[in-house]
Image (cartoon, rainbow, N blue to C red; front, side):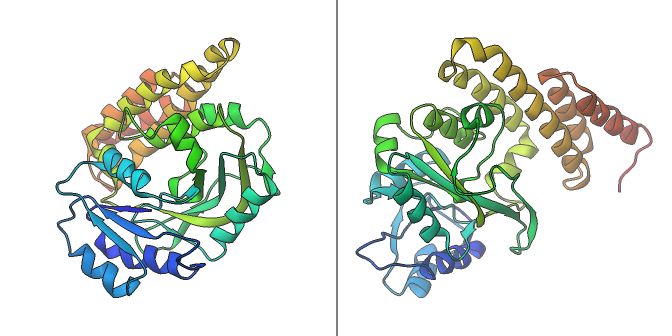
Length: 302
């Protein structure tokens, strides 16, 4: 299921990446769910590339990413559901690897592979952090996913039963996937293959970039950290909360540097670095606050 909104230049790549692994209509549903895109005629793109193989559904109005994801889930028909965002794509072998994981671990509620972060042109920027050296269960997985984001959406497939029992994405627009992966991990076994077979695209017009510019990402993550406390055993809550706050504080401090240089929003970058420091006072975040403050003081623009 492929949710899209105003990402038409990336749609051919995602469709082609799925069609290249298509096991046939009897085994795989492929459908684009369009949240009222205005940048192109998405139906024509789907018809041109899919040649009748790919379904298309358009929302009557723009409903936002969360409800568009929900529509994808509601319209899906399979036993396993892959939400593959319209600006991401999969590499050859992804679906076979997922199939093998579910076959070897039939109790798993979710399976995910390694992935690469790629730029607008599809060039690899950097891989995900290594979680395991072979397919299977990740050691200390619940603790790990509870303190930091280890998965990007194109890499994970959920058993339909998971959505039926736990519901869908909700509450926030940044970090909604992290909350979902934590919720799943405390209710179902999750398995992983380290093979990097999915690609998460970083570009100027995706949801993540837009939230970096608004500053909403920090508020949303703080909300998610509060939301997920109820999933943890009582004796772990304080420790896991502190670790999550520290990890995201450091991450947001680093992205504030990107806001300064990449987006050239200098004062916004400082505000975000300070907000990150309020999440957790640590040397790395403090360094970025100081660094950006000095750059503003000397009016450094490069």
